[in-house]
Image (cartoon, rainbow, N blue to C red; front, top):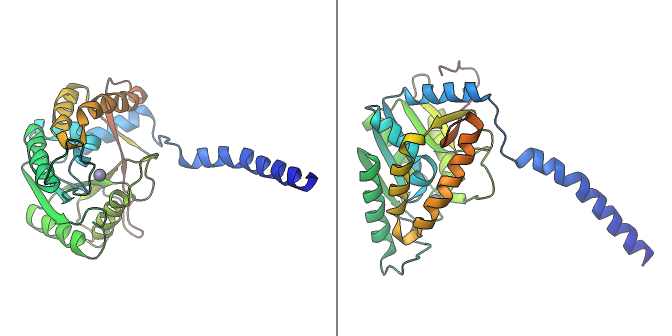
Amino acid sequence: MVTARKSCLGCGLVLVLLIPLLWIRYRTAWTATPEVALANGRQLLSHKRVLAIAAHPDDLEWYVAGTLRRFVESGAEVEVIVASFGELGPNRNGSPDLASARKREQTAAGEIIGYRKIRFLGLPDRDVSEGDALAEGVKDAIEEFRPDVLLTFDPDFPSLPYLHEDHQGTGRVVKRVWESLGGDRPNLWFWQSRRPDTAVDTSDVIETKVKALSAHESQGLGQGATRARGFNSRTGEYVGAAFAESFRMAAPVKGESSGQ
Ligand SMILES: [Zn+2]
């Protein structure tokens, strides 16, 4: 009994020490002041040809639709890749053919935001980063569209709590392709980062974002739209905006200068 109690005390002590360390490591913490974050956001918005790469229908609208709408309003051309149809769900309205339904929903959301083109790759849901298909799709899009900036999930410092292998896997694949492109490659920014350094003020476009989110009927994102408002208003608080979306700039590849 005494030994068991001692070891429990030991466990407790380890936990007491571990929890703050884990919190410091995994919490979301800005790495730029609000002024620098907003300046980085303006730099991001100065691009003219934007390619955003997501795993599932609704990823773009949830994480970056405000920023993509601001790009569209500034006259930039926005193309997106949606790697899978998200056929494994959830399926909140009992759609008999979820893949087709989600494709339609993504198309409708894209029309609301103003994507010039949606490239559906049709890769298997929850397996999008397996094999070479996603990398090939990204390379083809870069070759055809010639973007000056890429946006995707943060593969290295994803913000908690929502982690998904397809999300961080997509980020890993895009980063790998980007690193292989050499000197005159597009710039790269990551969303869903717990080390953000870039903020885009989305106050003027939040209603458009919410409308695009609610197009994803099978995902029940009417309710999600309320969550998105809360989430984006917390991001906005840091930079003194009603609503904002956050990003992390990709670090320059070793041996090359940043160019950003
Ligand atoms: Zn997703």
